[in-house]
Amino acid sequence: CRTHYPQEVVIAMSRNTEERKDAGLSATMILDCPRRAILAQRYPYYERVSDYWARFQGTIGHLALEHYGDQQEGVIREERFARTYHVDGIPLTLTARPDKIDTTCGLLIDYKFVGSVPTTPKPNHVAQLNIYADVLADGVHLSSQRPVSFQIVRAGIIYASWRRVRKLSVDIWPPEQRQKFIEEKLRPFAQFAADETLPPILFERSGERDARCDHCPLRQICDRIHDHGD
Image 1 (tube, rainbow, N blue to C red):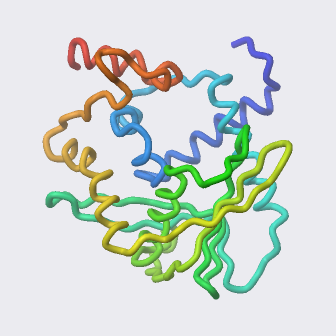
Image 2: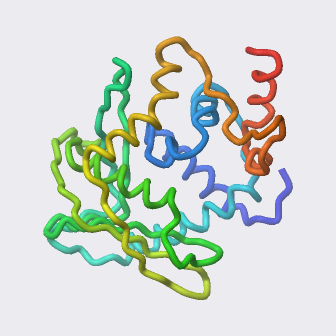
Image 3: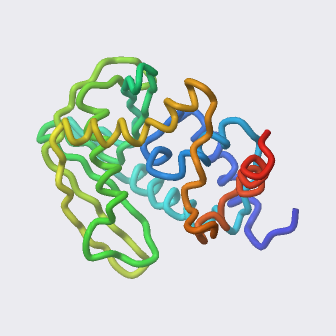
């Protein structure tokens, strides 16, 4: 296909997508549209390079930090962990890949590469770090299946754009609050596992679709199932 993007960039994007397939049900997935997450696991789809590019710039930034980050005792970078939750009797494994964990002081750090740096943490990002904290509290290292019990007491997000960097602290919720939130987010996936009932269209108000649907690579499949079933 014809594109203005260099071949190397297109190949890198494709490989990044393939690598993420091993993530299973991740923290970022349950914070997004559950309908999209389920459909992505069942149907092949094509994602436009122009739509993927904005997200891939964040991947580039993460790779640079991972490459140049110092090896420090007690610090874990970019490794994936998992924890199984039981929602309405259905076991669901949730994975998390924090950018940086300092196990010596219970510190969790996440990097966000954005177009405009916010003055306060975005709610979804706060939720993401709290999901990470809960997975790390009683989970396993995904590749080795070694149990982990990292108690996160402090967390922060480092927002970075081309012009500035800002560090913002994030409150860690009590375990009961974290688990209740996670169970609510996992419930649509538990329902689908039980009887294959798809979640409703998330970004729809009064019959009109939200602009976020316009950039979804599964929009046509989603609409077809909504209108006719499949």
